[in-house]
Amino acid sequence: MTFAAARPPSASRPGLVGRLLPDDPLLRRLALMSLVNTVGNGLFVTVSVLFLTRSVGLTPGRVALGLTAAGVCGVFAGVPMGRLADRVGSKRLLLVIGPLEAAAVLGYAFVSSFAAYVVLVCVATVLERGAAAVRSALIARALPAERQVRSRALLRSVMNAGLVIGSTGAAVALQANTYAGYVTMMALNAASFLGASALLVGLPLPAESDSGVRIRASEAAAPRRQALRDRRYLVVTALHAVLELQLAVLTVGIPLWIVLATDAPTAVVAAVNVVNCLLVVLFQVRASRGVDSAPTAARACARGGALLAAACLVYAAAQYGPAAVATATLLAGALVQSLGELLTSAGGWTLSLDLADPRSHGEYQGVFMSGQAAAHVLGPLVISLTVVAHGALGWLVLAVLFTLAGLALLPASRSPAG
Image 1 (cartoon, rainbow, N blue to C red):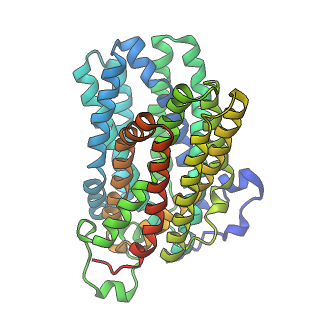
Image 2: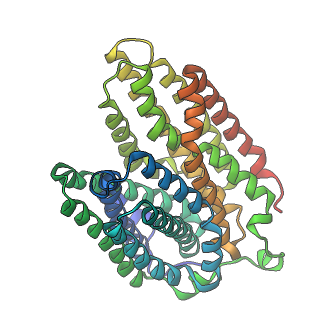
């Protein structure tokens, strides 16, 4: 299927602004939705833990326990939400989920007990993970296959830019440290969900694209596959989920490693995150070039896994040397890890789309997103059992894990479906 109103990528405005907000009406609207939503998320995520501990009075341990329970619930949200999207349409379902997410965020302002917090954070996470799967299915159906990966790369760049903007804006609430300031951030996040829903209403999306019509004759004649019974897809999802442990390396491994084993100042944690965000914003689209089929995607993941492994070894070396050397080593590791992340992300998008049954994009994207969610839940535990418990040896174990997962995707992606 093609879109008569769409312009080719070359028609987009040059420069960073042109890359993030292209002239193509469909992609531009998707990018604006992502920007509005992630600015709101950046505002909320930055202040949520401090709000729960300082204003609600929960202990850090209870906050962490609630987040873990919510993460587990989120793992199981993708598939049922994806299947529902296949039945009722991705756009229609997102128009329901958006206001529900807004209500869930506002609900934090009324939390007064641990039990209420756990229920609310689990509901909010189920909606968030389900919405991610449904949005992925919407993109899969809305955009032509040849533009999928580049468009997703652009949207990821927009997402990171939005998170940076939101996190920066939340500094005002953190500085004030008042209940009213924290609730204002929640209200703005809720407004971002409603704003994204309003943009979705006007999305220039042909009706037939949201019902999965774009199917080749050979695919229509073949039996319809189910994601949970597609062994190839499940193996690829699991292997890519191993590569997704890189997020825990960034958010848990590096902060703990800096404090426990290096002489680098704690401010390096923020510097590492800045390096990662900037590289994703600036180079994710470029990194996706040429990743347009299952074989090229598997090779990108293999290269990315090798870079993630190299980053682990560089991080391990940061324990040797004074503060300046440790700082430089950690930043070098962040650069290498970010390059690996760019490749594994581009490869993952292509594999998740290319190996799926196009008649069941919602279900297949739900499975793939559930694999990512599982990696995010298990990631802190893996870091604890490797880096925290065994230091440099733990980094070596992670390096081997990333290398093997990336290489294993090469034969896994070539195996027959079913």
